Length: 168
Image (cartoon, rainbow, N blue to C red; front, side, top):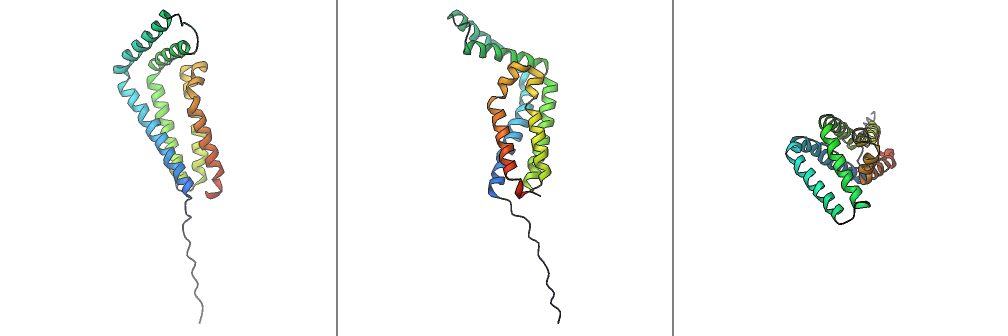
């Protein structure tokens, strides 16, 4: 009698850490990246005048208090510049952010399915996505807007890279 041994190939089990990273990335790219960009585009015309007025009022108060230099004054000036540049480039910034958010979500989905291509897509998209503020707003202020977001992006890329061994 012949032995019929059939092999059962079990799907690869996704490590919990990759699951957590993917969920957090989905929230960041989908929630903050995609939804925030669309929300900003839809509400910008209504909120822009109030934001400008608030910042100008803050700048005036700083000047009246004799604090027309230093960190707070520069931050307020930069905030006004960001709003002005955003108003000038709202449609292309939104389109770029939405495109990068969707591509990032695709990369996250692929990594959730344990595909290495997702890591490469996610990494390239998010590194270029960090350049969007620099391109549309300008080098000095754009670099300031990167701050924590840029740090978190690089941290997540490193954390995914460490877990590439679990992906095919």
